[in-house]
Length: 261
Image (cartoon, rainbow, N blue to C red; front, side, top):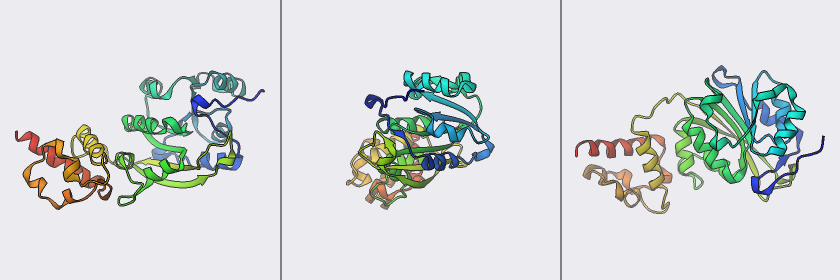
């Protein structure tokens, strides 16, 4: 079959190293006994080949019509499990009524958006194995106190245990990207629900990191902080010094003060 041409506007970089593809496929652990897996952006199916060797109930989605045509010819047995569409706009509840995992070489320009959608679907998505730009992968896996630690780190770590698995050089892609890549695994933790308003938690985290060099006392001014929180030593810290539990505490304090208005 004729090869699919990588399209710059879709951020396509096709993996050509089969050993790396195999490593990524094997990183799916079937957390919680889940075997249904959705691969995002399979391209020409280099990763798909290895996923089909395992005991997985595999679905694949790609926005590229040329890739979809190619994949239907290559994997006729998948039939309707080959989905043409934009993952970011897909109504996942219609396709996946039960829990499932996600895997893929995510387009770097939308990788953060994909992960925010994972957060929206966290009650269903038990595991994510993905390749991202190395800096983004490191940021997501970073612990507090690290300069890479940021908004996505906190929000994802609230609901997932995150492992940085390995780095991938540019030359194993066609065309090679201008950056290094990293593979991470997100495994759903036991937190069903935060002990605070999730919406307010997200707002507090985003505001905390809006100006990284400023203390939380300055970053969170707009939240009308209660007096007892203003004098708490936590407010002298910067957002990157706080873990998930610290942000939950902050959110609880703000939430309680609003309830007393």
